[in-house]
Image 1 (cartoon, rainbow, N blue to C red):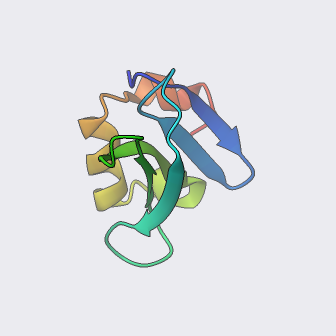
Image 2: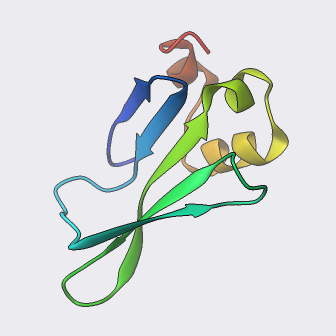
Length: 87
């Protein structure tokens, strides 16, 4: 399970990878094909960028899109975690 939380927001599933840390700046980046999975990068006071979270389209998870599922697995998110959100 990631360090942060998982929440369903509209047509998206948001996965936090850090908790208790507040970046000073944020950026969204498409990962892979445009319009699908997005990485939320956070810039720390030190100037270092971290992956603060991920945003996945629910449709990509339901359809078991290969790249989406690979990132979810790398975050140690199991099918049982996704079932809590009806996925």
